[in-house]
Amino acid sequence: MVTKNSQRSNLGVTKSMNFFQKIIKPFKRSSNRGLEDDIDRISAQEQKVFTFQSLVSATKDFNPTHKLGEGGFGPVFKGRLPDGREIAVKKLSQASKQGDNEFVNEAKLLAKVQHRNVVNLWGYCTHGEDKLLVYEYVANESLDKVLFKSNRRSEIAWKLRFEIITGIARGLLYLHEDAPDCIIHRDIKAGNILLDDKWVPKIADFGMARLYQEDATHVNTRIAGTNGYMAPEYVMQGVLSVKADVFSFGVVVLELISGQKNSSFSMRHADQTLLEWVYKLYKKGRTMEILDSEISASADPEQVRLCVQIGLLCVQGDPRKRPTMRRVSLLLSRKPGHLEEPEHPGVPGSRHRRRTHRPTGASSVGTLSTTGSRTDSFGSNLNTHTGGSNTGTGKATPVSSRTPTPTRTHATRSVGAASSSSDPHGKRHMSY
Ligand SMILES: Nc1ncnc2c1ncn2[C@@H]1O[C@H](COP(=O)(O)OP(=O)(O)OP(=O)(O)O)[C@@H](O)[C@H]1O
Image (cartoon, rainbow, N blue to C red; front, side, top):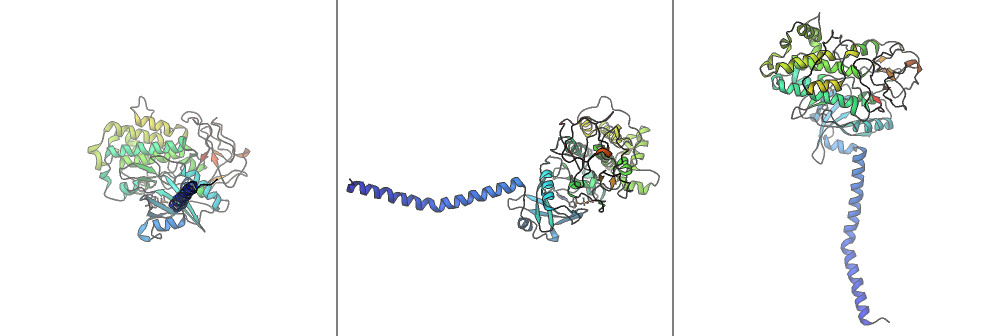
């Protein structure tokens, strides 16, 4: 039996429920929507996807006043995200013929490459024909501008230069041995070292070869290196290994010490390169004469000598003799006991290279091709298998026995004789 009292109290419950629902209803709806928005945002962040509209807003519609410059891969714009973070947006030129899916897959992989000494890729965007990469913005200029194109050279005193050398070494070691997918940069040069507001060096443009695969008809001269920094074996025979990056690193080290640009040094002194000049002075025991006169007062002679010796070890003609980046980092981080004597430096190559003949089934790297005969003991020839992993056994796969693939190439880690170490992780691919 329903009493008046119970009716009244039921009414009270219903009334208060209605009241409660009224209060929470709009809140519930908006909180659901908020939740959905959050999930969308978080998943976009996870996927590292930027909408085109967000990049248009961030760069004020790619306003020319926001343009930081234009390199071989296309223009770069400075932008600011709604959360205040500054970004550098690289609009890739159409030369990247990749399809959207392939681009997205490669960009996702590159976005996992995160280190204090590399320019971190925060995400990407595809919009019609456009493909864009979104990087952290690095506030100071690139090393080449500070060192060669301004009168700011003296701002980077010796201590700073030593720290820059150490930072680049760490970044390269990470790319070679510790990144999720092992990366051979192929274009280490002063212009690809960006400096942040605390002068921390960050390696830019890593992994671009993944986004700019060339095909049989399209010769991509941009991705494979720059004048004055390229290892001779890469230029002449198309043999690519981590040791090619070590060579380029050595050139940057010697440029940092001397304050002289290798390519313009050769123009001024027709008969020798910066590397040969350094080598001769080193051999004569006149190492301190190599040092940039602008910073001689600030220099620690012992550190200068160490860096010259490391630089010269890195630019040796024979890649087997060059140290790995792990060894370089170790040498820089403590006083070396015994450091071997560097041999004569190799002749650095330029961008204008000879295209060698490609044997059937071999895959090309940049503008160069592998040759079946170059399965050197230093071991870093191409491995064109896409699915298999580098086992770290150090055995270079003969080019002729490999499965050709037009889209992706991997190289085996350099593990041969004297100087190379095996892949500590054993299972990582080589990427360019
Ligand atoms: N993440 C970044 N933060 C700040 N500036 C950047 C960033 N990335 C690139 N830049 C600047 O944008 C300009 C163009 O850079 P980009 O790397 O595309 O070409 P480049 O280094 O000038 O030439 P190249 O393509 O021959 O290497 C340069 O001035 C570079 O310093």
